[in-house]
Structures are given as C-alpha cells and as structure tokens.
Length: 196
Image (cartoon, rainbow, N blue to C red; front, side):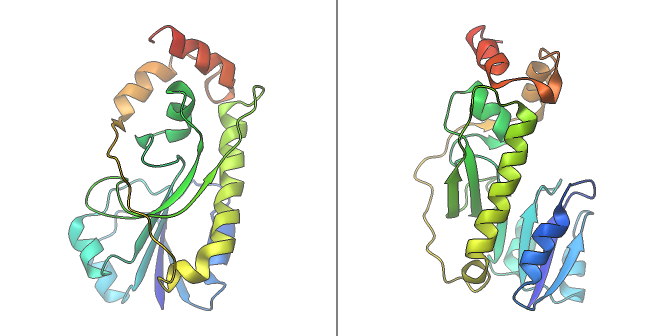
C-alpha cells in the first residue's frame, strides 16, 4: 500500500508518526507542500494520513483515494472544528481531546475513527497541553493504525455540526495573552469571562 503522510515541514516529532505509519511495511511518502491530483496519480497513493498539514484537500483528491483519508484533529469533534482547537477548547470551556476522523469536503465533519479525552490541569499551559496532545496522537495511532489502514475499524458519524473557529478570531484573542503559548489554562479561562 502507498500511504501519503501529509504534515507541516516544521512539525516536531513527525518522525515518530512516520515510523508508526511504516510499521505495517507499507511504502510511506512524507509530503509538506500542497498536494495535487497528479502527485497522487504518479505515486499511486492508496491512503492519506494528515497530521498538522497546512492545506485543505480538494474533494477530487479525496475521491481519488476513495475516502481513504484520515486527519488528526486536536479536539473532541464535533467541538472546536477549525484552527487552534486546543486553545478554543479552553476558551469555550469544552472537554479537551483528540480525534482521528475521515476527511470529507466539509472541514472536520467526517466520521470519527478514534477519540481520546485529554486531562487538563490547572497548571497546564497551552504548550504543555499541546505536548500532551502529541503523546495522545502517538498512543492512538500505535493502538489503531493496523485497523485504520485496512478500514476495519468502527466509524461513528458526528451527530452535530458545531461552529468552526477561524484564524482571524484566534489571532484577535491570542494577542491578549502576554505569555503566548506559555499562557496558563487559568489565563485563558479568565479571558473567556471577559467576553474577550
């Protein structure tokens, strides 16, 4: 099987994800740029795995792999669709977690393959929460990858379509946090009380 691993070129620890994807002896290609249909055809891609990828895939790309495309989203979907879901989970006071979901033409609305709640502690910062979420990615992927790649895993459709968070909203609110990524959960919770 030819698997395309889409991620950001600056993403930390992508090698650990790559190793798990390659553990079933498939041919795994790592790609950072905007992928095209020609690329998928040329490399005979069977499956797409997206983790921290910067681009939204066109419907024709998803059609080419016949829906065999999975995305990692750091929230408990359907909550906090869109950008910076860990931040918005705290701001919107929803449970924090991680979802693996099928990719569809509707952003972050595909069927859920695996989910895991992530415990949030009062002394957490956005940075520590992000690092914990990355460990959760590796945990879920290690435990479910063989079933995901062969499509022998239960898929749970999302029952709700909740609002999407946009980069412009994040940028406007985030600049109010003087410690940036080292802002505490309490800082964000306090900000949410002010209607930002």
